[in-house]
Amino acid sequence: MSETRTIEVDYLARVEGEGAMYVRTEGDRVEEVKLSIFEAPRFFEGFLRGRDFREAPDITARICGICPIAYQLGASLAMEDVCGVTVDGVLQDLRRLAYCGEWIESHALHVFMLHLPDFLGYPDAVTAAKDHPDMVRNGLRIKKIGNSILRLLGGREIHPVNLRVGGFYRTPTPDEVRGLRDELAWGLEAAGEVAEFLATLDYPNLERDYEFVSLVHPDEYPITHGRLGSGSGLDAAIRDYDDVFTEEHVAHSNALHSHRSDSGEPVFMGPLARFALNRERLTPRAAELAERAGLGAACRNPFRSIQVRMIEIVLAFEEALRLVDGYRAAPAEPALPVTPRAGTGFAATEAPRGICYHRYSIDEAGLITDAKIVPPTSVNQPTIEADLRELVQTHLHLPDDELRHHCEVAIRNYDPCISCATHFLDLTVERQ
Image (cartoon, rainbow, N blue to C red; front, side, top):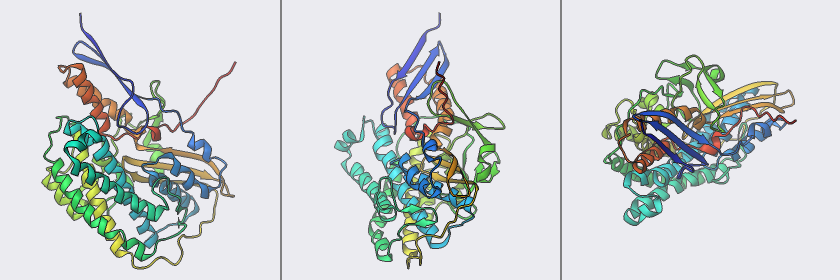
């Protein structure tokens, strides 16, 4: 008779939001894998309907306290798309600088507080700090630098209030921006040292043939704009997102699952995808560290995503320094005028965890009639489950506790922002 093993984790630790994991095996086969997200639906898309289009950035910023710029800027860009406005020049540079701050603080939270303890053999960062105080202290300082950028450009670091459709409510003075420079220079050096340290760690051996999907751009490592690209030849405009991907409900999760509309196959978004599709557009120091870390043209081991996140922190510091040095004068106006017109607008930016897609329809008065926001974690869920299936299948010989630990680490590879993932396509209540 074959042996049945069930591994359950009722509450996943060191992820953002509430989720659980369930794995069932029969003999030498994995029969069932579920990543359950039981975080309650957020209904933000419903909240937006009937609101003025200019309110969308401030409302969507409340979706996430870790990556609010992805939501604020995505909403702003989509509204500018429907209204026929393009923000470029200095205002676009300031938006990219704000996004660098978000990448730094969000990636640092993941690397130092959520994921690094797994590889150092500690249950959490507080315990790790007893033996590695400088590592944790520097990690907190790196995160604080990201927060300082958000505070300057966003008005505050949590749920910023200064970004708007057309630009900003207030742009900083050159002296205020230059005030960031010394800490950014320190952060670049410190992040480089951590990237070299991470290359010395041992990582579980798991590689899968993912379809990587990210924004791609001919001139820059994509953050605030680009086209949809993939390793299988996908090349599509953002407005075609709903044709490329299909979302569906699954019984075991409050978050929608996404897959390719044509093949039904899951895809992988996030740092590994960005790195694989845009490696040649890394900044010089980031490219040098990626080469020395042996990451190759593409990294297909999800456990090494912590290294790629650190490379992206280095890139964000280099980009932030370039933008700070180039900011010589504040623009004449902090925002372009935007007049509403009826239609549908589309936008996507690269949140730290992957593509964050926005679609809004507004009427001629500028009232929102429809909204759709897709965070990357809901796209990655099927891929996370596929990782868990293969990981368990190849490690069935391990005791349950050790196997459970490997599975939890595999989920944290994605830095899943579980509460963001619970956007809902529809809700039906039948009463009798």
